[in-house]
Length: 317
Ligand SMILES: *[C@@H]1O[C@H](CO)[C@@H](O)[C@H](O)[C@H]1NC(C)=O
Ligand SMILES: *[C@@H]1O[C@H](CO)[C@@H](O)[C@H](O)[C@H]1NC(C)=O
Ligand SMILES: *[C@@H]1O[C@H](CO)[C@@H](O)[C@H](O)[C@H]1NC(C)=O
Ligand SMILES: *[C@@H]1O[C@H](CO)[C@@H](O)[C@H](O)[C@H]1NC(C)=O
Ligand SMILES: *[C@@H]1O[C@H](CO)[C@@H](O)[C@H](O)[C@H]1NC(C)=O
Ligand SMILES: *[C@@H]1O[C@H](CO)[C@@H](O)[C@H](O)[C@H]1NC(C)=O
Ligand SMILES: *[C@@H]1O[C@H](CO)[C@@H](O)[C@H](O)[C@H]1NC(C)=O
Ligand SMILES: *[C@@H]1O[C@H](CO)[C@@H](O)[C@H](O)[C@H]1NC(C)=O
Ligand SMILES: *[C@@H]1O[C@H](CO)[C@@H](O)[C@H](O)[C@H]1NC(C)=O
Ligand SMILES: *[C@@H]1O[C@H](CO)[C@@H](O)[C@H](O)[C@H]1NC(C)=O
Image (cartoon, rainbow, N blue to C red; front, side):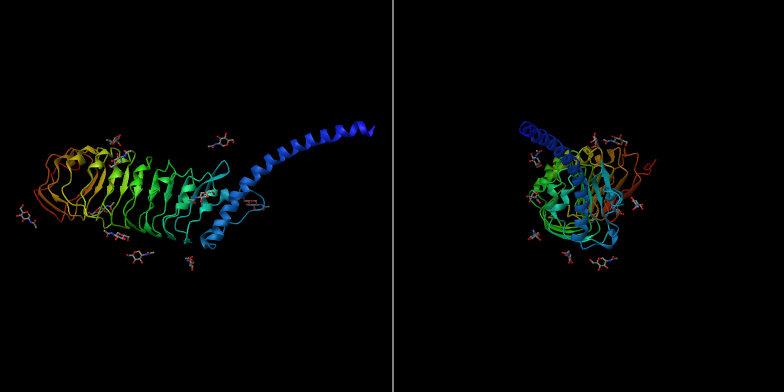
């Protein structure tokens, strides 16, 4: 009797066991995933030597998703997509395990004391759209393979650090960029032509870098969506090119404190959406254009140049 039933029993049993194991693995896998995101965050906190500003990052026993309620974290479907750690007195470097938060789209670590070279560790964050590392202590050249940042990156702010050297050409391969801020660093190459390849670009901030004396690159003519051009003190020379009149989306231009010469092109005031224009402290000369089509102008500063004539009185209607 036992000889008949025994072969059946293990068979039945093992099938059930497999199914049970399978179901269990589904459950525990899901659970482990969530737990591990919290574990990654707690590991980050320890790695940065427990900054006071995030001392409330402690696991809550009654909820495995408790980290989603921490003010610095934003989750979607219980998975971390945003890390907002601006001005939290964080020092140290950005570890590569930050990308173990697989769904991370948004990293703001601006206004901290992070150091070292550009953190290529974030290359592994494959869903990254927004990266703000401004106002930290980063140094060194930007990597030649900076296009290894996620394809969909649309916001990059590296301003107010000590990055130096050339702008890598590969920056022109971050095709989805809408905002690029590299202001106030120690960059010393020329203005990168490849920026003209960024057809979605709306905001460009290169101000306060001791660049090699260069003209505004002809490739900028292609920036048909550019609204904000901020290039104070970047060693611009030569004339303001006529093609500026083709950059039809421009709203706010600041080319102050450069070495621009020649006259202000008439085409500048054909820009319909222009609201702010600052050409303060250059070597511009000649007559100020008198035909103004830019009906939305709010502010003009042409002082400290060698211009003649006056700003037309029909401005600012
Ligand atoms: C459960 O967690 C919530 C916050 O998510 C907290 O307010 C509450 O006190 C906790 N309850 C217990 C019994 O720990
Ligand atoms: C959230 O998860 C549900 C179920 O897994 C899925 O159908 C939905 O598409 C997810 N939403 C997003 C925005 O990923
Ligand atoms: C900032 O962090 C440093 C350690 O890195 C610490 O000595 C200092 O007290 C912190 N400052 C504040 C305001 O928390
Ligand atoms: C990306 O992740 C892989 C696998 O974890 C690792 O081998 C690689 O070094 C990481 N790359 C960077 C740039 O951190
Ligand atoms: C950044 O550069 C400035 C000016 O060259 C220097 O005074 C400062 O020590 C540098 N900081 C770092 C973190 O390299
Ligand atoms: C630019 O900066 C880099 C790094 O600081 C330096 O090695 C190089 O000599 C500088 N080049 C020029 C032209 O000043
Ligand atoms: C990128 O820009 C450079 C310089 O302006 C140009 O030679 C090159 O063809 C551009 N590449 C693409 C893919 O548009
Ligand atoms: C000018 O501004 C208007 C209103 O914001 C906008 O619809 C239009 O597309 C802008 N023009 C250009 C060329 O970007
Ligand atoms: C541009 O330059 C003017 C000085 O002419 C200054 O008042 C203004 O704040 C600058 N704009 C930006 C965005 O820096
Ligand atoms: C300013 O312009 C006037 C006349 O256009 C010229 O005579 C004078 O030399 C110029 N001054 C400077 C400092 O360029």
